[in-house]
Image (cartoon, rainbow, N blue to C red; front, side, top):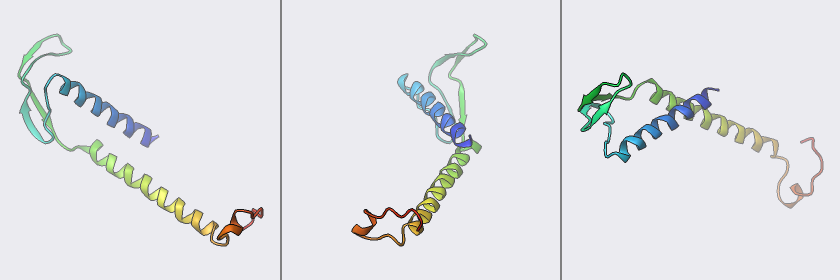
Length: 101
């Protein structure tokens, strides 16, 4: 469930960045900058050159942790599968019908 949430968060962030990029606005990766645009907010007020602050917050680092968990689980599963198949080698392994190894 956590992986699903973090991938949705990454897709949401990517969509926002692409939407701003379509209008020629590139948000900063770190720090504070002015957006060179007239923005209408959800309160229907107009904001001229609003400040945008960005930093690498908790969702960014949670994404790295989730990628680490996924990579670790894939590596462990690969090691376990290789240990199961240790007795079967070569062409004889293709024709083996014994499921107990």
